[in-house]
Length: 418
Ligand SMILES: Nc1ncnc2c1ncn2[C@@H]1O[C@H](COP(=O)(O)OP(=O)(O)OP(=O)(O)O)[C@@H](O)[C@H]1O
Ligand SMILES: [Mg+2]
Image 1: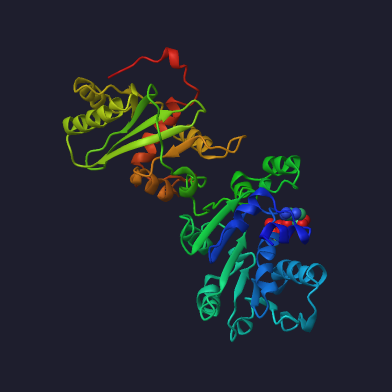
Image 2: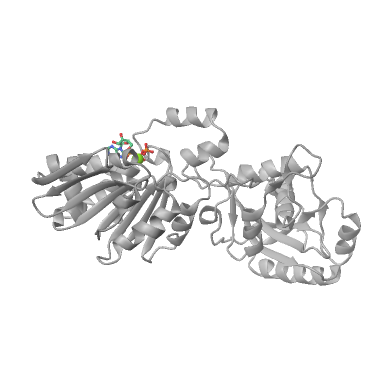
C-alpha cells in the first residue's frame, strides 16, 4: 500500500502543501507555517508509518506539556481508533508532565515537556516531533534532545510557526537546499484550503504587517529593528533570467572611501524588478567606475537587452556630469528616504497573487548582505529611529531604482541609451 492509500484508509486527505511535506524522505524535516496551516496534523500523520512498523519509540516534545498534546492526541487517537492498535500500557500524568502509550506491536509514543529537562533524558528514540519548536529554548534541543536521536539514527520533525529570527531560523536555513539530511518547508495559513479567505483578509487588515507576515504568512520577521523585515533570502534570492529585447536600468550610489555601487535592474512584464548584477567598489576613480559599468553594460547588451539609462543620488550632480562625459548617463533619482523604503517594502511583500515584486540574482552578494543587516538606529538627540548609515550603499541604489520604476513603465515611451 502506498503512503497516500494508507492515509486515505485513515480518512486523511492532505492538502497540496502537506503532500509536499509528506513526500520528503529527509531525516530532519523543518515545517515552518502560519497558524492553522495543519502543521500538527501533518507532523502527526507523518510518523504513523513509523508507529505501524512496530518496536519504534517516538517523542512529542513541547515547550510545555500542554503544547505537545495536540500532536500526541492526533497520533494516539489514530493509532487506537483508525489503526486499531491494542494498548498494552498507558500513563497520563499532568503532575509529572509525562504521558505515554505502549501498543501491543511494541511501539511507544511519549509526550514530554522541555520545561522538565529530567523527562528528556535516558531513552533513545526513532522519531521526534518538536511541537511549536520556536518556543523551545535552543539549549533543550542542543543539550538534551539531539543526542536522543543518535543511536537509532532517528528522524526529526520540527513543525512550528516562526518567532522572529531565533534559533529555528538556523534549523530552517540548513534545509533550504534540498537533497541533504535536512529539508525545510515554509507555508502560509492560506495554504490550508479549509481556512476561509475572508478570515485571513480580516486578520491582514487588523494586524501590524510584521505580525501578520509571521503568524499567517509563516515568514521569519526580525524584530531587532530591521528596515526590511520582509526580506527573505530563500524567497527573494533566485537565479534571474532576462529575455532579449528587455530594457535594463542602473541604480547608482556614489562613494569614494565608502563603496561606489551600481545595480543593474530589469522590470519584467509582471512588474517584478529583477536585480541582475551588482558592482561594489571602494577607493577607485570615476573613470575606473565608468569603464567597469560600460563593461557590464556590454555583457547585457550582448545578451540582447537594451540599456534604458540609470538613476543616481540627486545630490551628486558633479559625479553625474563627469560620468555622463565618460559615457554613462544617469538621471537624478527621487531621494525621499521613507517613501523610498516604502517602495522597496511594497516589492518585497507578497502580492495578491502571492508573487513578489523583487528578485535578486545570487551573484549580488553585497546587496543580500546589506538587506539582512540594514537596521534602524536612534541618532543621539532624536526621538525617531532612522536607518543606520553603515552598510546602506546597495540599499540606497536599490531605493533609487524602486522610486524611479515605481509604476509600470510604458515601454513605448522609454528613450534608449547605449
Ligand atoms: N488535510 C487536512 N484534512 C482535514 N483537516 C485538516 C487538514 N489539515 C489541517 N486540517 C484542519 O485544520 C485545522 C488546523 O490544523 P492543525 O491543528 O494541525 O494546524 P496547526 O498549523 O498545527 O495550527 P496551530 O497554529 O493552531 O498549532 C484543524 O482543524 C485540522 O483538523
Ligand atoms: Mg499546532
